[in-house]
Length: 192
Image (cartoon, rainbow, N blue to C red; front, top):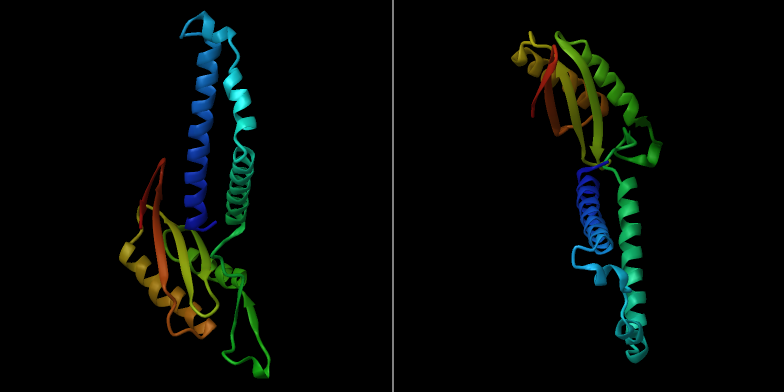
């Protein structure tokens, strides 16, 4: 899931959670009767509220439009769950006239993960190719031990592993974000 979808999830779930909490609290408060026993025994909708839609012709079309808007927001939210910046594969030729050679992103990232994991003090490496076919970018998450030489680790990632991927994919540039995470004993420290 990309950052946009994650933001939509957090925002949407927060709003829905706050609305449901407010509604549940109001119903519970009314049922428990903190405003007196007369409030808990009366109906929620008064006679005036029940007659209101009959006297206003715009009421039900407005309810229908609001329901449609909520349904569209729900569909957009659902589609955002499936959206991702993850790149499925790359074409190795700039011109498709003579044919096309495609390499899967998983094959590239698996080889890259293996190469980085072989560096000294690296405990785990995860790689993802993101973006478009014309402008891919690389996201690396590397967990390392407490005794790691960070300068040597950075050089190994930058000058060897990423350079090998760029050469294999015949790319002049491959923007790369490396997230380093210290893993030692029982605590973790993340360096971005």
